[in-house]
Length: 309
Image 1: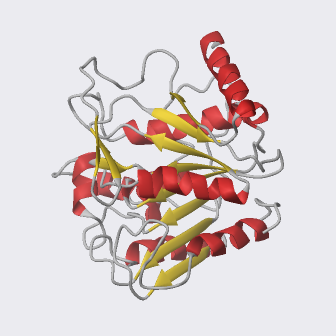
Image 2: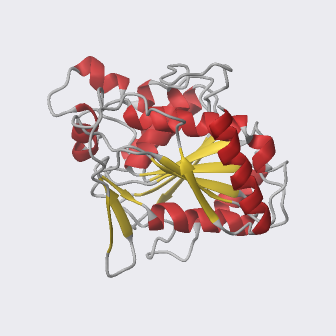
Image 3: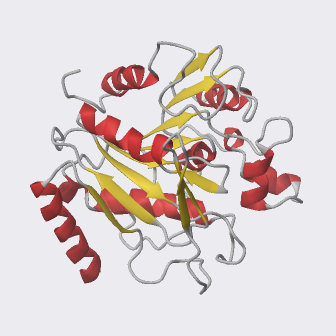
């Protein structure tokens, strides 16, 4: 624990000097839970459009993007990039989004979570959720040092990262990491962008389901990993965005999750674009509407955001 405190002290000093700097630190102190001893095979590639994709992630990290405008009364957001649980779309669904939150005056953290792999994990189905829970735990326990409100820590996910964010929002009582301080692992809000919500036939993104839980699974397992079936009155409110013509992840994923929240009086917001397909990040090119602007107002109306707009 002393090592982690030293790391966080260094981070705080660095961020005080240059608040716009990206600071990367390991998610766990010491041994990574649920991991096998293996060679690090992580790879990063940037395509012609400037989109970074990371594969074979077995060593998770958390990248902090601190805002100059932040204050201890505003929210922080932990961002989970998408990629079908096969890769991480680390830029347009990660670092670019974090910098946009910085412009709002919100500190953001990009989670490089482990990608499910039987060769690196004892149980690949829980690895990403362990990392999401650990990220929430770490940020909440060090909120004062990070200059954020520990009661306003949200999680955001794109596509399969949306499945991870929704899982963190519905399965927080299923503690998959050590939690000596009994720190709340429940996000205070979630932001789900064209999310994979369900693992049920007819709704799911088959690649995400297969990568996380395997090709041949029981109905009971598919239901457990279908977040629309795990919603309770304690599930945090959500801001959801999807396109009707999404051919990869059906828009019904967002609709069934929203309906489940509504049934339990967890009042949320759902934005459905007529067009836009899948994977557009923050910028749906078929419309002049920018959902990040609406998100600012949603955060403000829910008392998570107080900076001038």
